[in-house]
Image 1 (cartoon, helix red, strand yellow):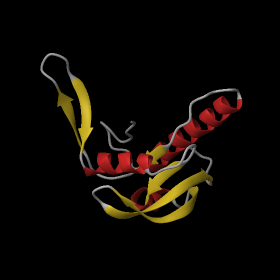
Image 2 (cartoon, one colour):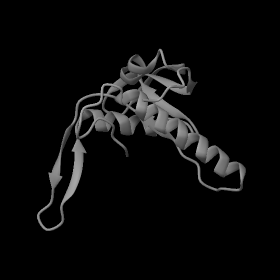
Image 3 (cartoon, helix red, strand yellow):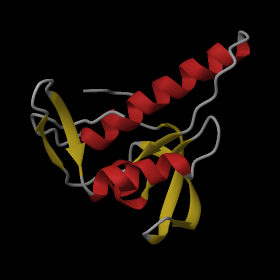
Image 4 (cartoon, one colour):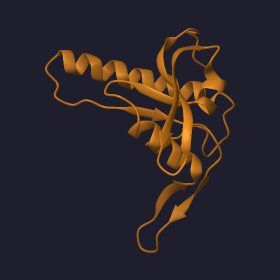
Length: 127
């Protein structure tokens, strides 16, 4: 799991997250072409969440909320080697990243959510 925009807000969080996901996907594609055995699915969702430190003897920073759960569902409903994003994320990156619509797909405890597969960057400038 990865988060962008914590602890300092970042207006371009969705683009940076998707750009990182593309780099991970491309690395894994190369890894697999060279005999690697692992495959992955990537899922991204954008929205508010709760973050904080938990623990009594051992402290850990953690995040919670509907955004985290939905991001997990994006990963679960993705396909091997693909980056699956929600419409919320798509709306934030659609002018900078080429995506393919998957339509509305049912997810656990949420009903149907419109999803997209990320294909490639349109805007090659990364802040």
